[in-house]
Image 1 (cartoon, rainbow, N blue to C red):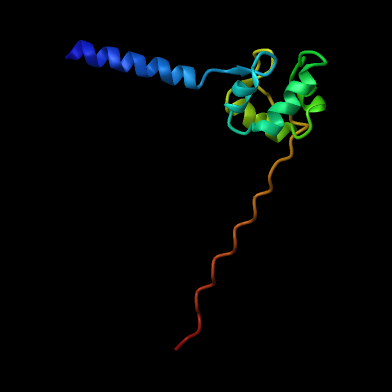
Image 2 (cartoon, helix red, strand yellow; image 1 turned 90 degrees about the vertical axis):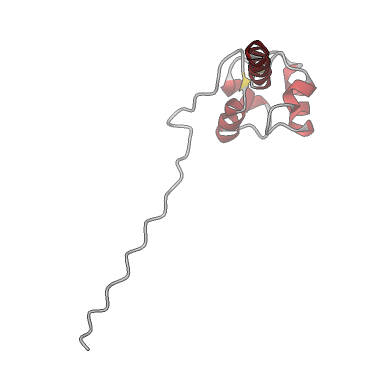
Length: 115
């Protein structure tokens, strides 16, 4: 029984690894692109159309040539497993806006009135 459990665990591990395998934008089919969370039929079509002119050199090239792919979208797609020539997206400090965190409200003042 222990051997069967080990085999089942191994098969599940392989299936999990395959589900999170990287998808290279230069090699992927439309179906593979659409398997990446955040890429639908419209974006996969734009990627494939832009790829007809040649492979994407890097993430910057992808962002320039495909409408709707900016730094924020690149970061999300990379986190979901998309790569360009096998590389993950690395945001540059100059090209990424930082979100402003609202200031915490001041605590309410205690009622100091004497009774």
